[in-house]
Length: 496
Image (cartoon, rainbow, N blue to C red):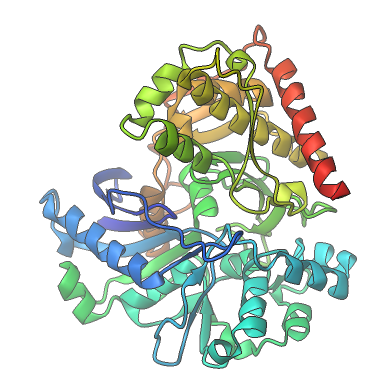
């Protein structure tokens, strides 16, 4: 059986066609070739067009089909992974009413903070497992307060993956996992949160039908199937946020297992069977893909907005004609410590692990007579690794102490400099895998259609290599220097 996986990222769409028996990717495609625009109408805002996502999904599928490596009509199920926490709103005719307010948008921070106080910190943390923060529910409240004409036209509220499934099938569904990442879900009562609904004044009919993550979310419409070369009536059988999906694709499903990812944003994602929460909501807990009321498997998520986006900014600003591989090679020519340069990477909106403060990105100790691009390239990767260490220490405070972390050898983990900096800063071995979000989504579709099970879906997955910490490195000294600079910046913001 062939399975189609769609990964709706911030930068692009990637699709893969995977063989269910071998779990191997037969063909894949990415669209567009250049990174998609993030629309920032004001400082701290971040939007994208859902209709452009849909156009890019179609183009990626058609490009994949054009490789002639499979018969598209042999695809039997579709899975979707998507950028988390975004808000998509449509009217009763399924017309998009506004651009999506995406994950790194900070406009709703104060709205969420006020909800946290009004509902009560104790109730929010023990029942929602999070502060409402700038998650999807708070973004919807921003639309309600600031764009009432749009709000009153809303028929359904969706996450980005729900929207792509709607375009494929004409049906709108959601899941407990998706609702929890929007902070609509009460884990104590295992139902939609009445407190969030009542405080924000939401009509419960805005929430789509709730289905299990692994289930039929609708069949592909005949006209869409024809346009994309697919068989009609194949079903979308899996939808999950990109980080739960990344964990699934790395076989991180049991309590104590931990995954990491370093793309546009950086994530450490561990599985717990406890209703875990951080008293300051610096890390967040959502329903994992295999969560049920009977088996409460939860994903404990550390998210760092300012990671790979800084690496991209440095490339575009200092070395637009080069490649990431060449940047990584140049970074490797510099000794650990980057000749004294320290970079704080938080230039992509408010950071949850820093109490939703907007810190900005900062370069320290630049010597215009000494430092070269290679020093900056390495300092960026070390600074991002140090941000992971800072966040992992918060997770350790909350009982998540991994002995090994699994990551795909992709994005920043494709860099030897970054991987070694991460391992040495965090003091935890990393297992690297051949890993891809769209392949994970395809495997999820196989589980959803009953072709695979959670127990056998990863029988062919083996680690490419294990990177162990090197005790001879001075990363702890460099990290403490970096941490002092960050602490001073945080104190400056607090005093202001």
